[in-house]
Image 1 (cartoon, rainbow, N blue to C red):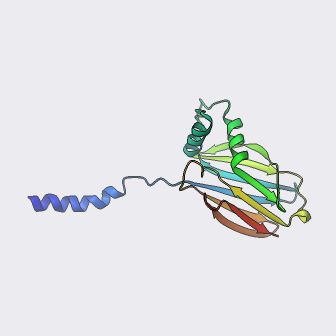
Image 2 (tube, one colour):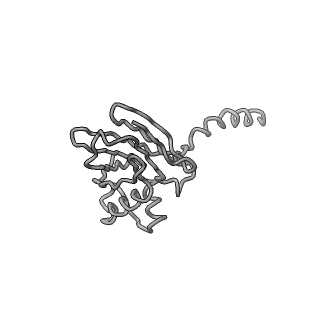
Image 3 (cartoon, rainbow, N blue to C red):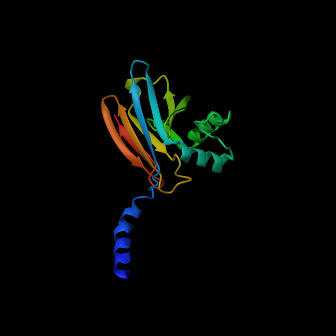
Length: 168
C-alpha cells in the first residue's frame, strides 16, 4: 500500500507542475515610419494587469482599466507614465510625441503614440529607450521592432540595457 501511494504521488507530481501558470512580464512595441503622413507611428502592447499595478504603485490610482468603472484619470496617468519611461531620440535628440490614446484587446492595452512632421531625409538614427514596467518588475522585457525607411531591427530591452538604436 505504501508503495502504491508513493507511485501515485510520483505520477501526479509532474502534472501538478503544469497547473501553476508561469507569470512573465513583456511588452511589445512597433515603431514604423509613415512616409505619407511624415510621421513616426508607435504602437505598444502591454498587459493590462501589470499596467494597473504600476499605476497603483507609482501614483496611487485604482485605474480599473478595461472595465466600466475605469478611472476618468486613467488616460492622463497612462500618458504621464509613458512620457517618463518611453523615450524616442532622432539623431541623438529627444523627441516630443503625441499620446493618441489606447484601446483594449482581451488582457492587453494597446497604446498609440506619434511623432509628427518627421522628414524621411532628416533621419540618420533613431534610438528607443524603454523602461516600461522595469521599475516595478525586475523580469520585465520590452521587445521593440523598428521598421524605418526599409530597414528593420528588433531588440529586447531590460532594466540593465534599456536602449536600442537603428542607424539609417
